[in-house]
Amino acid sequence: MSRPARRLRLAPSLLSADFGALGEAVSAAEAAGADAFHLDVMDGHFVPNISFGPGLVAAVRARTRLPLDVHLMIEDPLRYVEAFQRAGGDTLVFHVEAKSPPEAVVREVHRLGAQVGIALRPDTPFGAVEPYLGVVDQVMVMGVHPGFSGQRFLPHVLPKLTEARERLDALGRDADVSIDGGVTVENAVDTAAHGATFFVCGNSVFGGGPIAENLRRLRASVEEGARRGVR
Image (cartoon, rainbow, N blue to C red; front, side, top):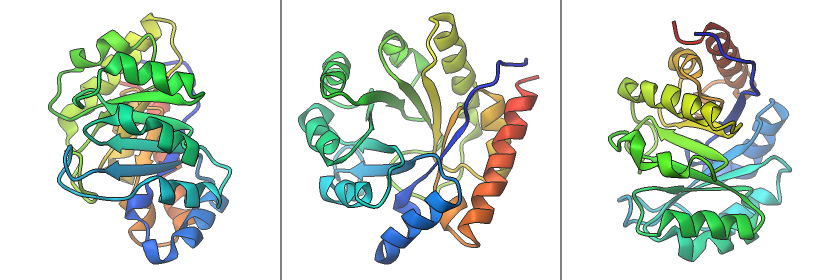
């Protein structure tokens, strides 16, 4: 099935970068053609890991003009969206499985002037986010169980990408369909073919080798997948 051409964006995930040289990693990825940066916020409750807070987001904001995609893997996103927006988050992505009422989170993020995304874990049915497709700016499908970087991609989530794109198109929405977790040069083709337009890429960018070459190969893969579409 062919699809109309859409903008495809690569967002390196800074959780996979060397925190001892984070500024250099940001500069290198921006110079190499990254379209945005993805920042994973973990609270030790919604997921078992703990990552970072608004201070690090603000530090990244000071190093780049690229959009910052802030992924709130936290129990009560409504409590913290203003802090992360003030720190420089352009898109605030929260989980439908979190405790905060989704409608309230969407309203507050838009009131703050930021874009809002809604995410779902690999085993959460797509129907959980369907009521919010008319108001969000991004639908994020997790390709791994959230909480740790470096996991293997779970291919059973691919149909969710197609479902998200088709439902958004039916509503006349040009919102992004994001894939986050385990994206590699090899599977990026399939994620794009199934409708993803926003690709969070961590170890595949920062895990070894020149950042510029890693991004070039990823971009070639997603462009090939977008041309191919689901057959």
